[in-house]
Every structure is written in C-alpha cells, then in structure tokens.
Amino acid sequence: MKQVTLVTDGSCLGNPGPGGWAYILRFGSRVKEATGNDAHTTNNRMELSAAVEGLRALKESCSVELITDSEYVKNGITKWIEGWKRRNWRKSDGGAVLNVDLWQALEAEAGRHRIDWKWTKGHADHEDNNRCDELAREAAEHARRAGRQ
Image (cartoon, rainbow, N blue to C red):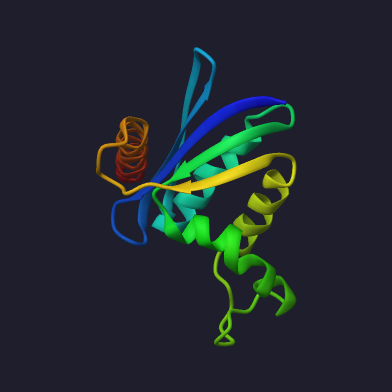
C-alpha cells in the first residue's frame, strides 16, 4: 500500500463569503498541489472540501497521513460522525448537522484508505500547511474577483 501525505486547508473571505480550498499531496519525491473555490461559502465547507478533494485525487487505496489545521474536520470525522449518523444527522443538542453532503463525501472517500488524521496549528511552523493556507487564500481571492465581474 502506497504511503502518502496529504495536507489540506480552507479559507473564506468573510464567513460566509468567497472561499477557497487547497491540498498538497506528497508521494515519495512527487508533489501535487490543487485548489478550488466557491463564490459564496463558509470556512468549514472549504476545510471539508479540501480533505474530500485531496482524498478523491488518490486513484488507489493508500496509507494516508492527513494533516489539517481544522479541528472541525479532524474531530468531525474521528469523533462525532458516528453519533451524528445514529441520530439521523443531528448533533447531541438536537440541532441539524451542517454540511452533511460534505461529511458523507468525506466518509466515503476516507473509507477507501487507511488514514492517520493529524491536527497542526494553523499559521505556525508547518511548511506545507502554510503553503496550503497561501493557496487557499489565493483561490478565495480568485472567487472574490470573479464575483465582481
């Protein structure tokens, strides 16, 4: 099974507002960077989209070290999702879980791989996380510029 590192990040200019997501995928000496954006979204949707799209980019089952600076993503997929599903996508307080479409997509993509979910402090000393942040902000800026035309 191939061992890869996937670093993800999302950004939003306003919340909600124009947003962007980015990932960096490393396999041996190979590196792939990708981004996407949405004209009107939230930061949490962009964080989730980065993880979904990064995992979707893997063409075969892999052992993945997935690094995110989003506790929402890490805790959601590793701690909260089973309870949400048992409660028909309701939080423990009875409120509806937001972003169900992306949680379901993330669960499906994650199910194809063996994933070690890791959290890193954002805007700190993790080089790939800082680069992902830069790419996601650029993607969000692109969405903002495109929305003005």
